[in-house]
Length: 579
Image (cartoon, rainbow, N blue to C red; front, side):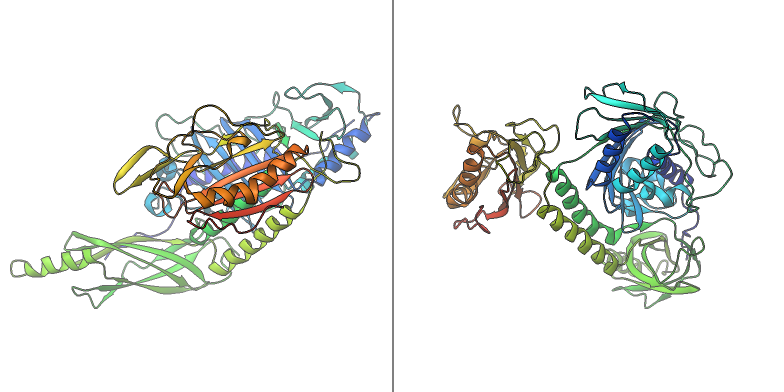
């Protein structure tokens, strides 16, 4: 019996985690600055605006990596790090920080664990930079507080104008770099830091030696020790001059991020905590090993930095079984180990592969009886238990509902006297231009449709059009009683191509979509209301080209708001009517 121990997770994982964390920490760190003038009130107004933002987006390029993160007012953050040509996803929520690593980097990032067991999963850690990961990303209010402290120690504010990506801006130079705000009201923070003088990587805590990167990947820069010592968790942030650009997502984008978070929180049920290790007893106990099944009891002890394990540890167990050296399938189970001391997790291996191999070996035992059953494998610690995941999900759902109810100021929109409004479209979105979602593969009965199936699309509406030109493309798998259905209506600038056309039952198309949603939106746009219009097709399985329902989300500048699901059935019943 041999079981691979779960000791010593990879150093490179910690190193890449360190890049993530320290990049983030350096990006968001604000140290003291010096300088004053007539523009002080404008900079203060910009900081106050930042403090009140529901979400801010931080972008930076450093150390050969591109960082793009959106942080909410409650401290949740979601984004990605483009590193070595691969995108590492980042998320901070519920007091923990996670990375999701592409398949191509799993063996390098976590060499002591099976890539198969980590594929597509969120991974979190504890010690050093990996444990902090996204935790050092500041929420808009936290970042505003740091900048406000810096401005309070500034004594000179000369009037300096310097555009940021074409936007007229005011600049003040500080010891920590340059702070840019919009020249015109409402004043907003656009950029902070100093790319020219910034180090390739901000100061890091002490960490292990970096292993060799795979062929073709750029070398990581050297990592200096943090001045004065101190590891992760000390609460000390060293000032950094890395330049970050800030932008402010509109209501629709904020809602979209929260929707993404709701979906991703569910995936945390199988998230792995790489900071929890296991001491495994190599002498496992085998019982009742017969043709139908074999039970393996594994004794292990969870270990981690002091204070990390405060309750029972949920562990995923994978054992590769062999009979006299012949592979006989995998035994997988999930169990709990105590917070202190060793515990036992039993795995019952009863799949068909075990039965087939055992039976064949038994049949040949006249020549050589079965003498040796072996199990090799590993344990991985779950990052969260299901009740914790549900609590986080409930909180995110509540925040999503609140954001859907909330509004924003009008920005450049004509608003009727006394009527509140907001810009519903994401900043910089071109108006009256259809944006389709990516096409997905589709097939029916083994027949593959090379041009795939439509997923949905969106458009920022300030006008509607009278459709003209060629007829829509023929959708896949359309049967009697169905029509060519636009996900985003042609009058809303929707495409006539297969990226926007699906087979829909006649009544789902009209009155389902047309009467219950589209005519209302058209009337509001004709009345000069700006509308963010988004449609998402829902499919019953990963392959069929015909959706079973369509979700329509409408957000108007003057109060129009609805979220309606239309069933793609002969009745075409909508969940409600847009008003």
